[in-house]
Image (cartoon, rainbow, N blue to C red; front, side, top):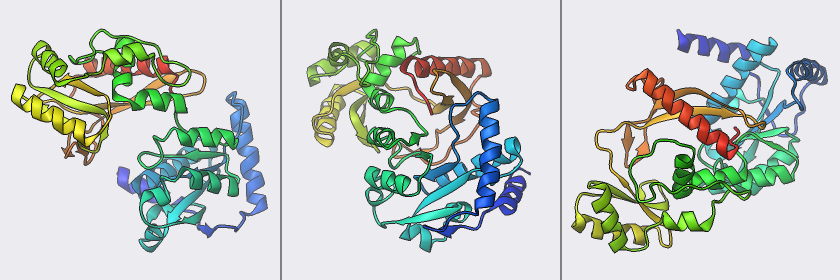
Amino acid sequence: LAQAKLSQLRAAHRPVPTTAGVAPDPGSAMTVKTSLEEYVKAHGGQRVIRRILIANNGMAATKAILSMRQWAFTELGSSSELEFIAMASKDDLEANAEFIRLADSYVEVPPGKNINNYANVDLIVQVAKQKAVHCVWPGWGHASEKPELPLACAAAGITFLGPTAPVMHALGDKIASTILAQSSKVPCIPWNGEGITAEIQSDGSIPKEPFKKACLQSYEEAQACAKRIGYPVVLKASEGGGGKGIRKCTNDEELKLGWEQVTAEVVGSPIFMMQLCTGARHLEVQLVGDEYGNCVALIGRDCSTQRRFQKIFEEGPPTIADKDDFREAEKAAQRLSMSVGYRG
């Protein structure tokens, strides 16, 4: 039923995409403007956001457009109240990607690696200014976690639908984010930085002293920490990712080898250690925050199906968790998000 409803919405409200440079009908734009302005005014909003640049592709872009159109249809009576401009690489155009067909118009961007297109901050801002959009939606992956993007959008006077650069800096670092989490009384598994607290600074960093205390400086320190928290442990490089800079260690011998491998894979990265949770599930809390400091937990998802430490698919809601326990997790996530001023 849900799929049928989605298909009906897609079929009934799919716009005819136009190439860059073709303007929408003025009469239609006037109708949209009036309706949207009234809605924003009635809800105490400060600005109208109508023209949205989708700085992503694939499933992320498709879900974003469909979800926002469904919201517009439900709240405003028309799914065409919002205007979507897509970025489309040659590869996506040749594949006749769904998100391009769903958008009102598109701008062709260079093909190849994502640094040429969807992860290129300069290009995203250039397209945003060229198309006079009101905001940029980054989605996930690509440029969504690059602090340079919200900074560049702000400099261009364009709203960024996501967290600010300082928050990205703070929560993007594995060590700093864990320190901030336990500072907000979020339960954390045993690790080498237990008990260390700090407050986020204006630039998104935490003071150097607590950060340094939470970093392992040598194999000997790592060995002492492993004995304290107990094997098995996971050795991590805070700047690692995608399966790099992470090793499971069950004894001193594996720890020594793991230390050499992690420090070689992500050279110069701070290193930390956590107790390994065997038989664990990867559950996430989905949050939304506004620019006034409010944050709400919407739902959760189970991301336990992984390959090489990367999620393959996600399931929601996370029925494996006890409802009361997961509610506590939601509250903890809200505390952390509000403490750093998260929005998005």
